[in-house]
Amino acid sequence: MTQLAQFSSPLRALYDVPAPAKLNLFLHITGRRPDGYHLLQSVFMLIDWCDTLHFELRNDGQISRTDLNPAADTNTEALPADDLAVRAARALQAACGTSLGVHISLEKNIPSQAGMGGGSSDAASCLMALQRLWGVRIPPEKLRTLALSLGADVPFFLSGGHAWVEGIGEKITPITLPAAQFLVVKPAAGVSTQDIFTSCGLKRDSETATILGFAAYADNQVFGFGHNDLQPVAQKICPQISQSLVWLESQQLQGRMTGSGSAVFAQMVDDVDLSVAPGNWIIRKCKNLEMHPLIGW
Image (cartoon, rainbow, N blue to C red; front, side, top):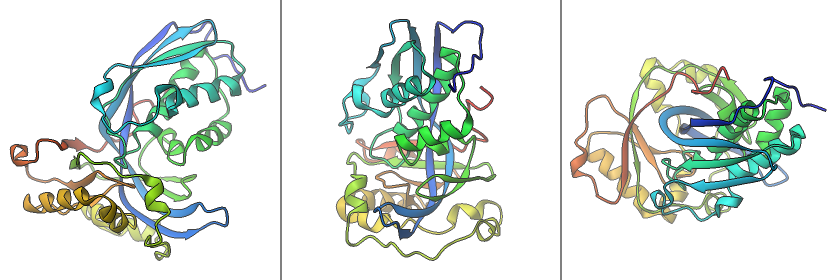
């Protein structure tokens, strides 16, 4: 039995729990495992663009969920009952053996099909918040295994901060990054991660990089390290990615795609006039975070 009481009695609710997005500073595909999973190298960076979750205790053992702004994300295809937040709650409930349940309310701000890890971050925040709500704790290694079973990006959001990520996402090495600002652009169209990774045009043999090589870049130059191997394929599937990159260039910004897209980003030193951007794009000025806001729970 891995359940350990953390509180003398469970809380009744937890409100305003953040789930921050991430940007991939680069993403190299270095190979492919026999089971079909791709081997990657990347730096995952937390930013201050967050979903917000609210948790209310249920004593009947049921897990339910509602969207507080269902019209905010037109690319969402999964039913609420099938999303990662609900799956995370069910997995933790089974792992802990608790008879308690929860009602989850989600304010969705991070766009889907953007390569920003919104669903994975929601799942990780659920795993952290529900241990507190239910008054339970499971060992860190078991929690990481549970997180990986939900998705390759979920363990990163439990790691505490920025990270050098390898393998299929399970090899995580904490790193520090200089404080910086970024302009993130999400065009109206999304792109399927599966379509990118199954493409015959995807480059799968990038040369292996090293943390030392990344760290050798001075100060803010680390934000220009490497490239995104998924970007050329994604641009063919979703032409709006190319349009977004061209728009960033028109603002004297050098952009690249994050994750499997379709969001692109660029480091921003001077302010940018967003009034000249296409009206149906989501554009946000972001800062990187020093650490995950739930660390210390």
